Length: 444
Image (cartoon, rainbow, N blue to C red; front, side, top):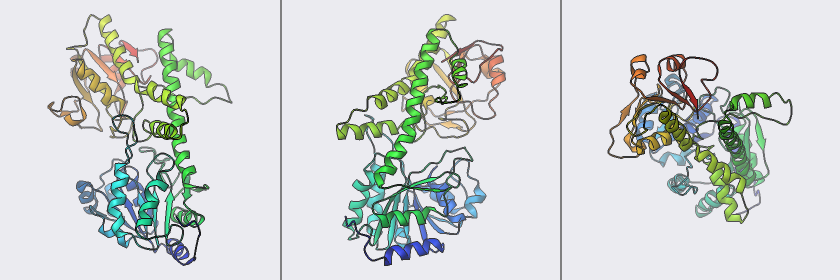
């Protein structure tokens, strides 16, 4: 890597095009992070090219329809952005922003295959004067390890005629305050020139800029943000199990502790972690720590605690059924909410999916209700040959046929008053049915 800033021509030219909104922005990955970002750039006057390997997404955007829940068709139709299933148009882009998934593998190891494949697809189309910004959440060191060599192999000099940036996405799907326009943007660059370009790129679209001294600082800061939540949720999930053993209401305990005006931040227990970041990032950070020979016991323990919560919910259900003389095998169980959190249809890493799998494995007769997840593909479940399931209606007739209802994700509009009144048994993993009322409610 050439660490000098070199002649200012390429840097200043790109910064000028960004300032005048003449730059063409390419966004790779048009999901929950990439599509809102692409639309934000378009709405601020930039020409935008979108790239995604999902042909259905590309077709939808081309027809002016949104493929992402919570983003209206009109916003897509009026954006003027073009979508592509191949990378040829990347050569026309001044900046390429990568927003592809970074999940974990079967052994909880980082899976950066989507980032690698994206860079391989872009490589033939790189040219002097371009910038690459990685937004995908990952372990510190990724941008230097993966992006910089691709630029070097293309004959480009980082900080001179090509610019490498890391700026992690901070979207909170379903939260109008958690958008790129509202949230401050961390920006790290491979060189001072790269950082300057990164600031020029994001200044028109972000809710403020937070420049940091290096790529790795931005990468580690993103990991820390999410690991902070994972560790604290792991702690409160352990507290929940202790409270249950003592026949105490953990939410009352939390509410009492939250009256302290300093040195305390309340977190709420649940059935486990879900989504594309919070359940994944502890394993990315722990993997990097092992590579460095540094212990990360606290982080890894939080991951294990949270991963165990779906099984804990199933055990609480089994015990509650046993108390009523019903065995779990053959019991009719209705799951409420398959998405990982309220207000979204996203089932990635959702604890509801793991609860479903565990119950299916134990022989329960399952159905589910989630107004935002109308179908549950068999490929997401234990047995590949199982038929696709559809969300059932939530009414008294359906509830009357169930031995138990497991409340995993209370979606907006879900009639929990009806559930409490009509269900024989409710296992509540979220504390959504606290307080006095009819029916038998077991917390889990």
